[in-house]
Image 1 (tube, rainbow over the protein chains, first blue to last red):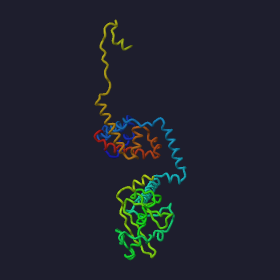
Image 2: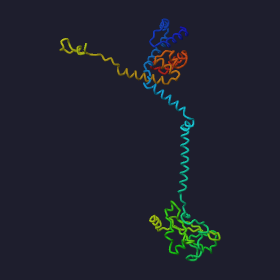
Image 3: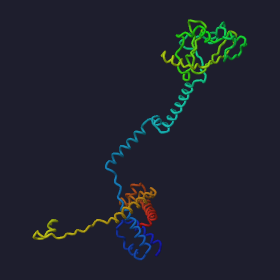
Image 4: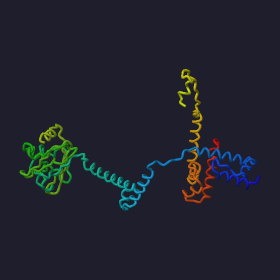
Length: 250
Length: 98
């Protein structure tokens, strides 16, 4: 049996309907050619299997949904380019990253701002008389120390040690006068949180400085008229009344 | 003729046996058919799109070659060729079932 005849017969088998009767020539060929007969049986079985599947039927509202979707797509394409750009996924992701970065920066700034130094510092109160720190904070020199020697904790930086007794802290003066004026003491909060308002100039007493004792050690820098400066480290007072006093005054 | 009439005798006293044959397919036959359909679906889904569409339109939907050519916007010869190739693919994939 020639291959050309077999190809012709197989093409006819392939293109025929499933249960269609073949031509007489094809039937005669199938009776003689076992390979073509096997091909016929195989194709018949295969088409039966595939034909047993249920055809996919579109739902009843398919047409309506399709038209609605086409209309929606058309509206989307008619929107301005800038709107589509803003509403796109990369733009939203970029905005989210931007917000994250800005939030991190703000958080870091806030965190640095709320951190307090290990040693409490003095600062002028805004409510008091604004004075420049160098001449005004300079302490009166006519008060003598207790033993005629520098107090414990006094560090000289640029002044002769013999002149140290002349530069005393205002606390010493105020203590000598019976303690600071009660109306001059600002409200003191916990110095680990806020170190402000621990230093104030009394407007009615020239040269008198009132310091509220913080919980942490305080370093006071004093300047004299010759440009010298001294640093005094004041240890924290441990009897704990200053916190109670501050709370009571609120 | 009513079912009651078949079950009763002419006098209406004697009840006769009526054994209707159960022509439903056997349970295992149903199982085999279901399994075959699942395998055929799976095999068809693995065909490339250009072969799957004409095969489904021809053997499942029962459409003619010129209809398929119009749907797929291609020539009738291409449709015949693609269907033949699709059947060969399926035959290879379902060798144990055909």
